[in-house]
Length: 141
Image (cartoon, rainbow, N blue to C red):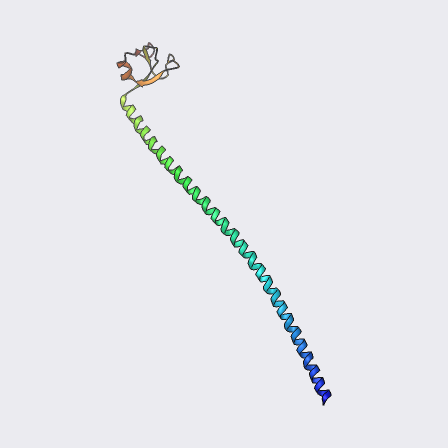
């Protein structure tokens, strides 16, 4: 009977040893997988941090670009206003009448295209030229 009990003890111990070995393997495998998952988690956190930095940088760049666009838009609006004023001024000038050219040292006025217009000729309304004492050149009469 003692032999049977020893055999049973031995069998139970063997089963327990195999079970413990299997459990140890399972715990080791689970621990190894948990370690891999933790490493992957750390890698993903690093990637998320890097992407967040890139997103912050892109947002700052977008804000800077928007400010530049706003500045340029204001400049364009200002230039459009000046163009409108110039166009209105041009319309006012046409109401003045025909334009002629005079030189500071001359006493004659010249029409556009006259061969005798000097290098330093100034454009002015015909009425102002006559009022200042200028007379038409022989070719422009």
